[in-house]
Image 1 (tube, rainbow, N blue to C red):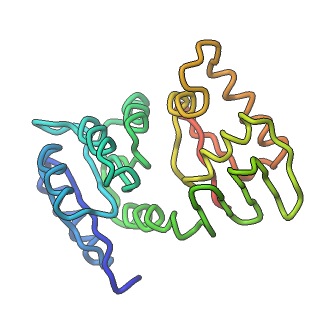
Image 2 (cartoon, rainbow, N blue to C red; image 1 turned 180 degrees about the horizontal axis):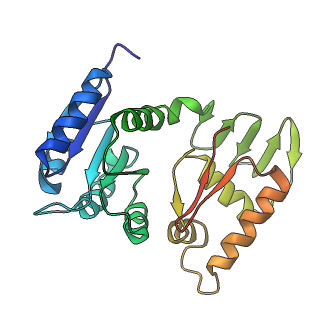
Length: 229
């Protein structure tokens, strides 16, 4: 791990949970900051500028969903990793979290080893990609050039339709991040009234036919993500 400790902010209203996560993450070498609700979390985040924020969903004063939504609207937190921590296993909670900009989801009860492993993996996502810039993504044997609308796999040109390209670029620009169907529609098709979830499924199928099954993974009931091999 780098000599510069990465900062993690934990926002949860349960003292035992805060203590458990703080202990295990500090042991791993992270700087850890604690807040008891969404409002405190936003205030503290502005002061310490964390690399990753762990948010409980159900909290007093301001819940995690609202806190995440508000922070994503602040430019300095646009690319900050945000992870939801919750005991609620209902699918709609995960979808609500991803819709406001969450990067991942960890369920209670917490298993310390699994938690640390997940956090380590999330914070490695940026370094796992060979290069992700504003106009070009290079991951493994894929090169995605946004300016030229070109894709190369293993040095061979892959011909994609415009929307196929835009969908691939969206997913690959943040490897491992789950995009809900709603966020894909908003990012790729904007306010088009003729586009349905079926349209997304067809484009995903075409991407898999052209690039193989390796890259685009389905997150059941939620959406899709770019999978690092």
